[in-house]
Length: 191
Image (cartoon, rainbow, N blue to C red; front, side, top):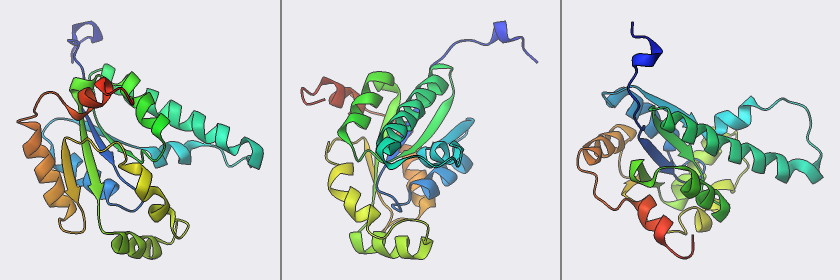
């Protein structure tokens, strides 16, 4: 085994899956981890929320606690990538500040931004089937989550299986164009 001093520095790739709740991000991430040839970490924002203690949060402090959780999540992802780890991010960019925060933290050339979506009726069906999300959560996120409009790749999970989406993403990685969506968004005056 190598000494840590012998590990060459590198930047990790961030495959950023953005979509509403129940859009299929986690299913695609699971398939990506099976499909990609290099080690990769799945970092879903839900896992960070699940790490929080079960201590009740007063309603007037909830927004602050959630904001800090998302900020910490973004920094954890950036740290993993900066250490040379490949990361699959599973996130909901339903607030503009979240995108701005990620744009400020991630190396834009190393991010593949993937739009994950399906028909609203399918989102509603999946929410009902899951039973662990408030009804209408995904519908409420729909108008905001893709508002920035720029992506490297798109996956419609109503028309493609998670395996097909993962395969498309893997094929895309071999021929990533420049500038990336993150580079374009970072240059945009609105971000």
